[in-house]
Image 1 (cartoon, helix red, strand yellow):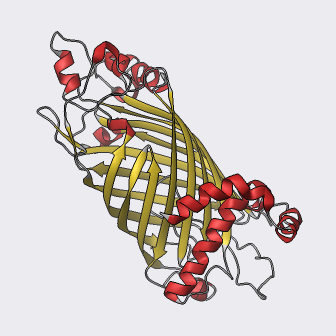
Image 2 (cartoon, rainbow, N blue to C red):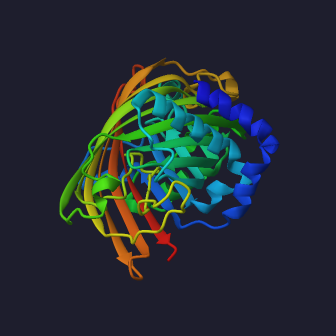
Length: 391
C-alpha cells in the first residue's frame, strides 16, 4: 500500500513544500462549488418496505458532511495533493491517459458522525450472557473524517483520513432513546447490553484509505457533455479500495447508475462519497475551470462489492470488556456487500443551487459465524444534501 505510506510521510513534512507550491496556494483563495448535508442509516427503515429486519449488526449511523473545492488549495492539504499527483502519474504510465493535467476538480470533504453495531439480543434474561458471548459485540465509533478527492472525466480518486473514538456512550444512548420513545414505530427491547460494548469508556482509533472509482463507459464523458441531448443515460463504474486502521483490508466492486443524468456528475455507490465534477472544458492548460450550470437528475443506482477484511476492530473478542467477558465466534474474512437506491436532484436559483436526495437499501453477508449468528443483514438510509456553484 505505497500511497498510504506516502500519505503518512507527507503529513509530517508538508511544511517543506517549495516556494512555488506555496505561491499557488495563496493565489486560489475561493472555490467554485460546495456541498453540505447529512446521511442517516437506520435498519428499521427497511421495515417500511416489508423486508425482514432484525436489530442486529450495523444498526444505525448518522453523518454530517461539507464538501468544498476551495479547501483543496489550502496549505494544510498539500500532502493530499501530492498523493493525488502521484496517482495521476501512475495513471499516465499505466493507461496512457492525461486525466490529471486537464479538466480535474479537487475537493475536500469534512465529516462528523457516529455509528453503532449490536448483537440480536438486546434485553435482559437469565441466559442473556450466552447470547451476548456467541454473537457480535456491542460496538460504536464517533469519528471525524477528512476526504480529499480528485475528480476527472473518467476517474475519482479519494484519499481519506479518519480519527475516531471507540466505546463512547453516544450510540447506546441514541439507540436506547429511539426504542424507549418508539421512534419509527419501534416496538423492540431497550438495549441494556451496551455495558458490554468493546472498549467501554473510549479508546482512540484511526483509518487511512485510498479509493479509486472508474467510469467504464464514455456516454457521460466531458467530450460529449456539451452537445449531448437530454434523455435516459447510464453510467457503469468499477472501484477498488484498500484500508489500514480499525478496518484493514481491501475491496473491489462494480456499480450502475441509470436515469436522467447530468453528464458532468457521476458518483460512486458509496452513499457518503459523491464524486462531483462540474466544469467546462479548459481553453489552456493553466486556465481556470469555468462553472457549469447544475442540472436536474432522477436515477436508479445499484452496486455489488466483494470485501476482504483482515482486521475489524469492531469484532475483537477481547476489548477491555467487563467481568472478564470473552466473545466466542468465528470471523468471516471475505463477504459481499450490496447497495440499491433511487436519487434525484432539483435545481434552483438559475441552476446554481440544487437539493439532492438519495434513498437506499444496503446489505452485507455474514461477518461472523456462531451458534446464534450466521446471517445476511440489511439496513436502509437517506442522504439529503445541497449543492451550490458560484456564478
